[in-house]
Amino acid sequence: MSANEMSIQHGEIFFLHELLQQQQQQQQQQKHERSVRVVGRCVEINTQQQRVVLQDRAATLAVDIELIADQHFAMDGLYQIIGELREEGEGGRGGEEVGGGGNGRRLVLRARVARAVDGMDVSLYEQSVRLRRAFLEKYKMVGK
Image (cartoon, rainbow, N blue to C red):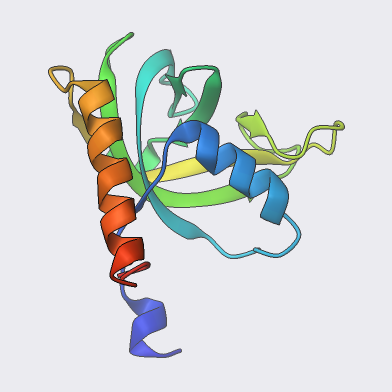
């Protein structure tokens, strides 16, 4: 295993709806975990299963908080989370179903960093992410 494969990757910024759409389109192609950064409102907390559910607009994503169990989550709080995205089978602990059709695969983010961002202006954040993407695309710095 090379040093690049062993190093922790930065979290690529995604909006929840983009992440779920992209995962549905690429579910057959990508089998390894992917490092992502998302923002969403906490709409469900399950301390027994060490899970929270984030929501942004109509998209929801289950978050495994086992690695950050000491982090406090509040209902309706706004959180930014960095972690590894993966699919879990039917035996998993819940999450957003990938690809529909009852395939039993669930999308789950295994959090390694979480922070409350309750004061953040979400529309301004979205605008800045879109401007950043345009800049990176213009100067061909995508993925850096």
